[in-house]
Length: 575
Image 1 (tube, rainbow, N blue to C red):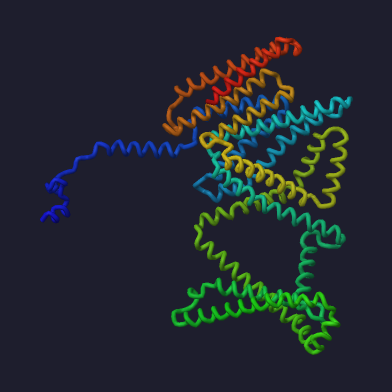
Image 2: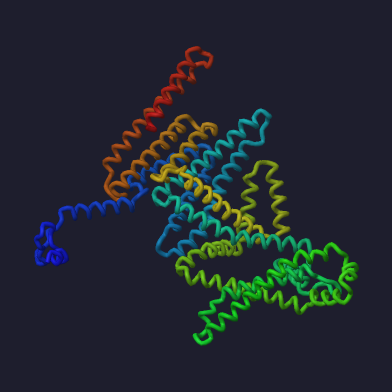
């Protein structure tokens, strides 16, 4: 009876609980649900700063980077750098899309051409413009300072570009290690297609030029040479043995047959009445092919005697009759063609079966997404084919006009000779491949930086923006920027990082869409006060140091005290 009450839901004190008695709701249930929802919300916004802090990071990084780059470089580079950062951030956003993944991946692959082109133009044009303005020099002593100024200004443009990328990536909140790795894989796969097409075009043009003007300019020379190789394999020189080549063909055919038959879905293709017999026949074929492969592998060292012993001596060694039989078998055109066809058919069957198996097991959407980067690479090639006659001449003229003095003539002559030798299409296809490759290099470098933890996971976008702004401000000194602009850039880097990190912390606690304008305004005002105060102190120290003589005995202790105070303040700020 006690067991029955226990099974019926008796209480611990022996009083049976009635099934009709309503159960009182737990007071902790709503609290637990709210906590769960809050945890889910916070987890969803992990790493995403609030809207106010994201706006502060973008505006401050944009203003500081544009001001620093415009003070030392051409305005056109500044515009293109902004476009590059926006395109890179848009590519990360496209890669991280859940809806319309295939179309988004293709768009990101095509956009890789613009990302590489804009980066090369922003940094390269700034370098060429500064180089043309700095050289030639009248005195040898001016070479080093002008060279350092050109290098510093180029570093400012590079740092400003990184700052802009960090600002735009903060707004999209897609600068995460997994997203950057996905974009790096996409860029590398996209780069493969124009690289192979450009290499094929350059190779065929080179073969055509070396072979003579009468040959077809694209794929005819390669087809002719491939046909010659196939002819040498199928139809060797008669009247002598070809033991090594024939043994290699037999081994390849045996391996292909074993892999091809083993990969076939025998049980799915056979009926229940013939299942056992078909499987037994397939296993016997596989065993025979493997045994032939083993025997051929052991016979391969013996066939090397053909390379060590002359044919006449080998004929006498094995007797003329045996030698003639070996020569007839190993040089037989029909037998070699049969072995080659077996390799192609069986190997192709194994490859197709493996590919179909992978496609069946994989999700259709994942398979499409895996292939779409190559579609993006094909679109890049199509753009090169469609626009090669329009973009090549203006591009070469623009680069030649940006070069200083005598370099313009040399570049125009050399580039004209290259275009005349290879043709405009191979040259434009190669340039497109180089630009997409630059995007792949940048994305892989950013993925490595994110993977090793150099960018903090709490706020990677603001960290990149702050580092870029700080680097641009630091190199702006050597590029001739004023002290006020340099100090403003340093303060901006501090504000960008602090606002982004504080906004990311708030986003994890209350959500990125919460109204946090009031506390963030107070925090931003305090950060600006500290930064402006430090900049004012640095300006005062700079003015005193500029007016004092370096040999003055009071200058060195004063400078040492200021450096120690600055280090203490830096440690306190980091803590």
